[in-house]
Length: 364
Image (cartoon, rainbow, N blue to C red; front, top):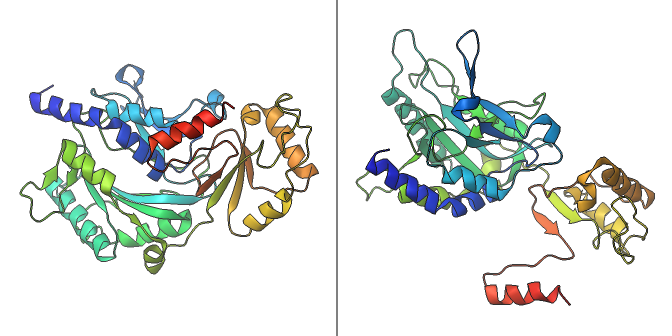
């Protein structure tokens, strides 16, 4: 590793915690599956010479038991060597998207008409067009050899269908931009048979000695591409497009999610823990009416540690049905949501001293 690349690697590693938190907060559409590039020893080449270097994680037998954690995202950003890297799906289980992206790759062209410079010219054109729409697109040099990613974040989820069609219309002029193929857009499918496609996160490239660079949109700066801390600062500062701006360009807001804890929020839990499948107590007064009212505006998901196995999940669903409380999903993990309602939650307002007092209060 060159001295310059080593310095850049250290800077990404130093900021991995910030980046992991940002990715979990702004990019994760679902936590039950994610993309993962395999390390070199695990990669296979088929009879046609195609390298199979990526999978959907976790393995099938682990799905529903293991979920994406912020710590896994942090490890991605800490990577100093080529090999494993993570990607995130562009569509949630209920077909909403928190971001959109364009992946401009350098394809093999018969007449060599497509070049890294040509790809960049197309990427820069679309970057400017998105800015003129009032968005804050992030233009990234994804691999150092003519591949570029354009990323736009949403303040609130949009329907995958509206994002999909917007992007297809947006890049329909690809031939005028000098490209021989339409670039990949994310979300990539409307109704994926499995989980839809995923896009690699910024950071260390999975097979090349390259860290993501970010196009510098500050006219006062001399360097056109930001690296290391400069690139990371720009990534963390990316603006999230507000719903009114997105609606104006043809996107449709998705129904947002409210995540409710089960014990102590719906189930009164006066008897305490009696086993994951034994739920003896009645609902907290007004739960049925409150949830019904919320479901007129939001998608309601109930999460509980009881749901780590099928018996527990079935017991929670049966209890909800018994007491006339209709929800949209029941799961073990907390999905991305607008609000989390938890009887033992601690709100953090930037003051650790007050937060520690609140945490200690749970001991009483």
